[in-house]
Structures are given as structure tokens and as C-alpha cells.
Image (cartoon, rainbow, N blue to C red; front, top):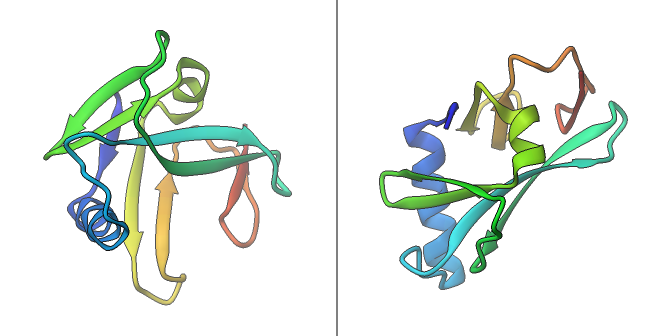
Amino acid sequence: MELQITERALARIREIAASEGVDLGQTMLRIAVVPGGCSGLTYELGWDTTRQEQDLTAQFDGVQVVIDRRSYLYLKGTTLDFTDGLEGRGFHFVNPQAARTCACGESFGL
């Protein structure tokens, strides 16, 4: 899978899982791209316990990630990072396919 997750993002994912009582041995992180936002598409992160037939999966240092095939077309080559800096605290997607993004960085377009 051509998706990268930084160590900072993995650490934050583990922290969130622990605080929410999520068992990463039984639960996957689902990453999706859905319509919305001022640029047309938004990223979505959430927990999932069900793998669909068409899902792509990858393991990142103990974190199982699942992405539906349509979303993966938009995410190919992307890096998921977590920052605490001036650009705002949170997860950030560095997507080389994004031709435009909104000012807040929450949505993108191709």
C-alpha cells in the first residue's frame, strides 16, 4: 500500500485508542475520502471492526489500517502525520495528488 504514517501519527493513534478503550488487536483504523468541505473532498478517520471484501489493508507497527478501494485512489502516495505546531494540532494528510486545499486544510480537490 502506497500510504505512509509517521511515528508521531502512530503514537497519537495509540494514545487515542488507549483513552477510548479501543483494542488495536481487534479494531482497525479506517481511513476514507468522502465528499464534502469547501474543496470537494475530505478525509475521514475512524475505528472499524469489520473488513469489507474490497478493502485494502496494511499494518503499521501494530496498527491495522483499512481503506476502501475508491478512497485509496485518492490517498495513494499520501503521508498521514500528526502535529502540535503553529499550523494547528491534529492529523494532517500530505497528499501529492491534491491540486488544491482549503485554507483550514480539512478538504482537498484534484
